[in-house]
Image (tube, rainbow, N blue to C red; front, side):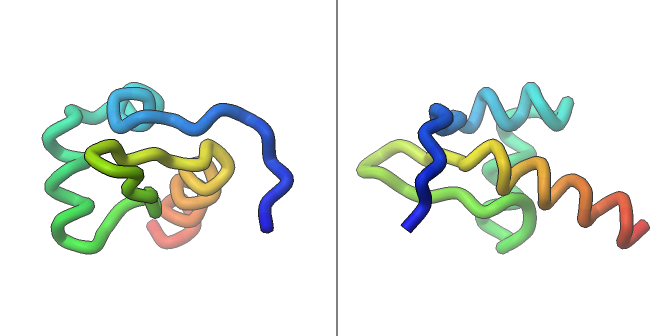
Length: 62
């Protein structure tokens, strides 16, 4: 169980952080790529720490 109380990010927040269009983030999600998000009803939420970790892993991979 996570004890992180930081607010979760929306798709728009993640797209802004990564500097990509929202549509790209949705396409990545469909393809199984990108940071892990959680569907809550019709919304997708992201843990900011997971997004940052995913981004850092991309720097290492390239």
